[in-house]
Amino acid sequence: MPEVKAAPSKMDAARKPDPPKPPLDARLTEQRNPRTQRIDQLSSLEIVDVINAEDRLVAAAVSDERQQIARAIDLVVDCLRRGGRLVYVGAGTSGRLGVLDASEMPPTYRTEPEMVQGVMAGGYEALLRAQEGAEDIPEDGARAMDERNVDERDFVLGIAASGTTPYVHGALKRARERGAKTGFLLCTYPSEELLQTHDVVIAPLVGPEVITGSTRMKAGTATKLVLNTISTGAMVKLGKVHGNLMVDLQVTCQKLQDRGERILMDTLGLQREEAEKLLGAAGGHVKTAIAMHRLGVDAEAARKKLEEKGGSIAALIGKPK
Image (tube, rainbow, N blue to C red):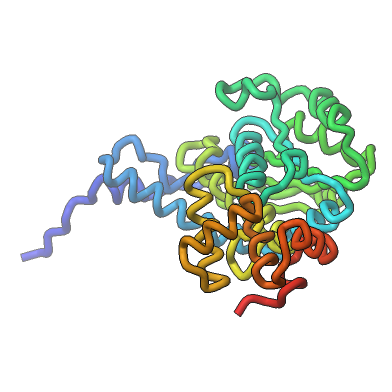
């Protein structure tokens, strides 16, 4: 008897690409994904599998940009050490991710709110409800840089998955005119002009989205990974991390109180009650508490010693074991 082949499943049908056609748009973020063209025919579990398969491409795409990301970290550190700021500029998902990363810095690393800022087209309202037209006005982006008095000490990173957002380009142009260092983060092929214009260009090529143009998906994930790496790398190099512990945190809630006490217990070999007492004497600042204990001084003297070492606990007491 001739062999009877099983009928193709819906998943097979969804993953079988149609013959390639020339893209209507050269931007990867706007192209159709041949692997998901029949996603509307899949079961819920099959949809999960298809999305997960696409998401697995993101980390590799970010890794391909490792040298550019490292370059961005060095630019940020140089600016922050000179009293400058890291300013993210974006619209839509890209802008919200910039605001999110910036907002995490004060509670995690005890930075001043002005040190890392997120600027997005449409302002605060756009965080909660899309203000799509706001991204089309480059003059508004330029005005945002003027309002923040961006200067030669600052690093401004434009974020636009498609690479074409007028608001972002307007902001970066004005930032450069004001003397700032600039970078661009996008998820499509960067133009030669873009590469020549900015101090660093980061372009993780995650490919077309599962749903065409929905850059909150793979492009958004890649963007968050890159921003996390840049800001975390900068904070590490600024001495706000000891080993892999966030020793520069300031206790502002019960969760951080517990974390601070555990850091002191781990690094100094203290019991919980001893750690709680020491942290209280340090005004809730973990790094100060470590310096107090290791040097046998009070909080004021510990803070002064830390300032003399540029805030680096390792420079003051040595590297962690």
